[in-house]
Image (cartoon, rainbow, N blue to C red; front, side, top):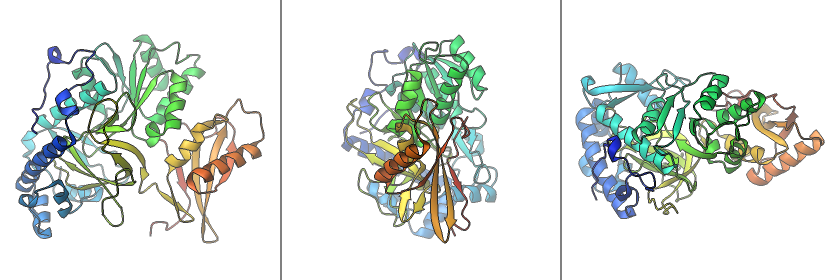
Length: 455
């Protein structure tokens, strides 16, 4: 049932042909996973109640106590927190807020959100929190095939971004690690070419953009670069087969989707080499998938909002954090032999979801269609307007440079295909190649011209 945390020295890293970073943990039975999670949850809730003024007051007001937790389902007794909770409590008890459950002297690292939807919120870590995180990142990289023989180029932002330190997970497993960060594309290509990097991590949009940029610079990503593995995160694209396939074709490399949150830690789930979902950090984070309106659990495999509870992160426990991400999960064993729950995909966000004539539509639904049609470049944009009190959707896509047919026929074909997949029949505008802006980080896919939409 229990498990001893691993803090490996380079000499104790598994042999390169070992399939697992921690075989006993990763292949244990579902019953053992649940027993481990319950033990961790009970201890973690007691820590939060004892150390965090916010949780103690909130739980007392709700009439709940850690001692009431006898099963994993009992977590549903506890109130939710949201991003707004984090902001409000940080303002009420600066600088880190009163969800923090340890003295400041125990905090050794903070990341911070971008603040794109409000004030930046800090995510603090103790030394043990940070070490646990890096061990998980190493485990995740290992499951995706990264090995000590690799040269890994980390091209995520290092400026307070929680994805920045994940490079230390690659170093922990022994890979030669290049801390490239967000350098200009031409510079990044030079670095990748000079040092013959075999792996890289970025966003799906940027992986696409970087490959296109390479070709414009006269570099063939398949022949002139050594990259064989691309880790992507930050957008749904890595779990959309059509997008992943297009990136793989462009690079001649294997793409692995990762998922993380700035408020917990860098990557909480990632694809193994089977690529059938993202293995969840189940010994670190308890995941609930709930109906956003009723708060009730949805059936396994169904879409719902991801609600997260940390199980080890002592600096700032997160108990029933509503992520706003719409996801689905399975607990079926993976062909790789790992038995952890798998995230089947991030289908969108509640704040990105569009309701068009009663149908829920996410940008990722459109992306799957746009990336599958090779007469299109794969870039797309959704424009939503309200005309005569009705919501009207226009999808802008670009024809591929090689396409010689009629724009009208291409638009009709795309609209018909999208309707068959989503139930929504949009207006479609065909644009010349390279019309839509290319993203160097997260792509903005929706332009909502309506007013009072969420009132």
